[in-house]
Length: 387
Ligand code: SF4
Ligand code: SF4
Image 1: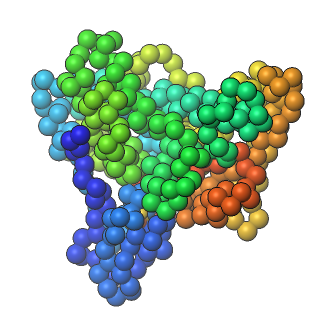
Image 2 (image 1 turned 60 degrees about the vertical axis):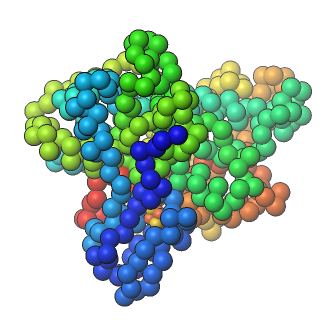
Image 3 (image 1 turned 90 degrees about the vertical axis):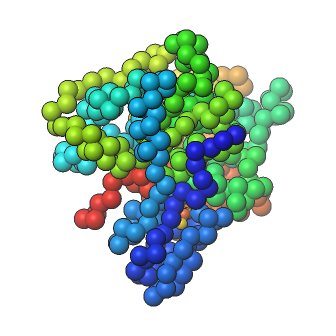
């Protein structure tokens, strides 16, 4: 497969001021160098998360940009250029254009993407719903296997880990390959979108998959790495051709001279229907877990799940846990206490993995998001020096 991306998404320039700040935020020990020395990245260990980039006081760490390829596709009349936007982008983009913190710039963002020339403008929320359904159903299969229900013998083991954060997935692959059977097989919302965009959409719009150029706007630099993984070719073509970060989209809008403030509020194009809105919470830590657990709960019990009460795990503050009692219809209403955990920051997951591998874990489902607080603080978000 030809990929538009090289492996080296994140680069430290030779203008490094040797302050050593980046080593403290790197979750994988990928930054080499001591205080007073030029630092560099070991790309074998790097998760492409960009936490070093947004935390570098000198702003000399950069991510590989795809903006020129996107501009070339937009200028090519033979290409049908579509874009998806992740839930965590809209508020951060508004802040880039001087909107009050918390302002949802979704409508103006869709309008600005049309002004930039995208042929179709979509919301990733729809395929986030697909990820939730997939992860929730997979969890049910694993639970049924664990309780000895016939017909589920080939399902994976418990606990199930989430799979939508590419930095976490790479960390698991690099450091704990034995844990991989526990990681959900569901594609992330970005890649679900890419797969549908290059298989279903060409039939619906009567366009060749090769003529579709699929762009993502993400809060995340690791998504640039994810889209170039060799297995992400459901149609025989790279499912997602290019990723723009929130920062890069803001830059494109400014370069094009678009007056963001005066744009009308526009809606996204419809893909195949409505999203549930549950996917909106994907961007914050705990969001994926809660959405997938709600799906599993409804499928297993036929009822809606009330509020989930997460509590910090003592001694592991970035790890929170909860127990949800699920009455399982297929087992005559027998109640199964499902224990779940959410981890914010990949560097905090090692002890949970070691417990799983040693047979000491009693969790059923574990969400891992690499960035502190989740994607809202991803490496592709605007850099705030006042934070
Ligand atoms: Fe470390 Fe993330 Fe920077 Fe890679 S991108 S060097 S994993 S902080
Ligand atoms: Fe990307 Fe979100 Fe994972 Fe950070 S937490 S690496 S922004 S997917």
